[in-house]
Length: 126
Image: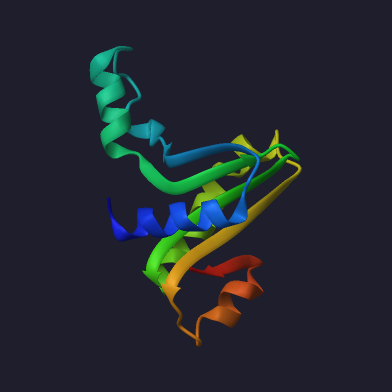
């Protein structure tokens, strides 16, 4: 298991979420499968080419968390979270009370922490 997955599972265990947790949540690139027949080939292309959110957590209270885990807090995770939120906004917001973004990490990067917070991203050091 990758280090990021271990961090994520450790954090989820600490948070004690109530609801559904989906690891490696796929965001399909529909433009790549347009015109392909339904079936195994189309599903294979969808799975291979999809973006993968480290975790989506759908809490019983209606909140939805989009979570990215990294060993070291970095700019990539910031960009990923903002892009995932934009890509999932319509799909997730219809059924969500609130959409929350979270970065889970082991090693901090003090210069980036205020930038994450300025976008409303919750930071969790594990």
